[in-house]
Amino acid sequence: MIDANIRSIRRLAFAAIATFAAGAAMAAPQLQTIEECLESGTRAVSLPGIASGSVTANPCAGCPSLRLRLDAKTRFFIGKEQVPYARFREAAAKDDLRLDLYYEPKSRTLNRVRLATASAAK
Image (tube, rainbow, N blue to C red; front, side, top):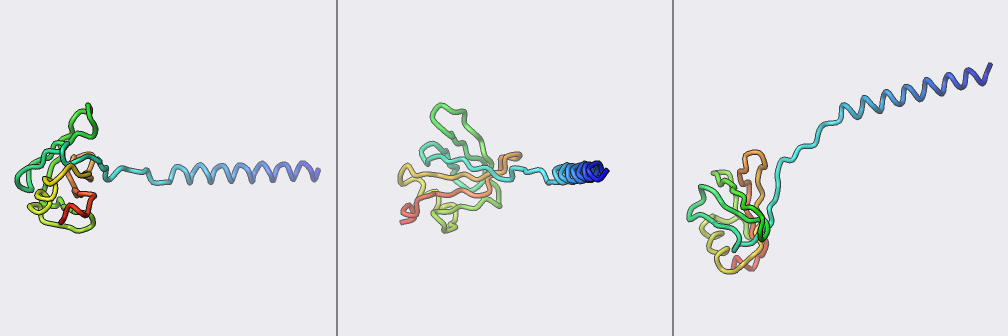
């Protein structure tokens, strides 16, 4: 009789743990992509003359191009330093440098654009 009671308690404990685990899994928030990064190069990206409009970028040779919008919130960086667009564009024209384009995937709006090489600022 004691063995039967222990088995019943184990079954109840297992059922309680399984129910709790299932409820916790359902309550977990869904992960969402809030930003994506396209790593490219300055030769593979067409930068506009002013900080508005759109940028056309090729993620790789032979890949279809991606059109990303610039807006008033888009920030520009050379290395870790935030710079005005005119200075950014001038540095990007110097050589084929790595360019990181961080954008919101649903709207394809650029949040920030970064020249990964700090030496481009010189």
